[in-house]
Length: 132
Figure 1 (cartoon, rainbow, N blue to C red):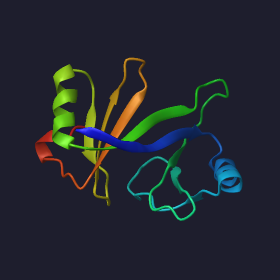
Figure 2 (figure 1 turned 60 degrees about the vertical axis):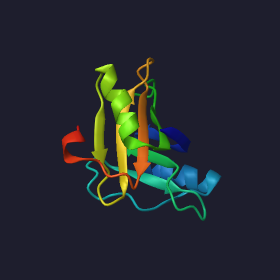
Figure 3 (figure 1 turned 90 degrees about the vertical axis):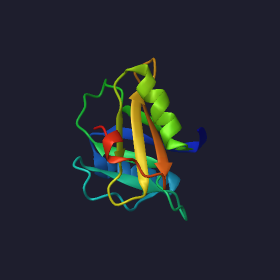
C-alpha cells in the first residue's frame, strides 16, 4: 500500500452559495458530479478541465469561531493492506464504497483527531469489510 496523491480537501460552509461563487471566481472551480445519495448538502468542485473533484464543500451550520476544516483525503492503492493496518489499531474507522462510483473510502482519525480519508479506486471491498 502506498499513497498516490492528495485526493481532496473538505470545508464546512454555512453559506454554500457564497462558497461556490468564491471558489469559481478566484480559482475557476465549478461544481460537478456528486453522488445523489449523499444525504448532507454540499458540492464537489472540479478544476477547469479536471476529471476529479479537488474540493468538497459540506453545507453545515457552524459558529464563526469554529474550525471549518473537516478532513484530508488521499488517493491510494492497496485497500486490503491498508484495512489490515487500520483494523490492527483497534480504533474507530469506517470503510465503505462510495455510491455510484468505483471508489472505496476508509476513514479514521490521526493522533490529533483529524479525520483522515483514504480513497481506493477499482479495488472492491468485501461485504464483510464494510463498516459505517
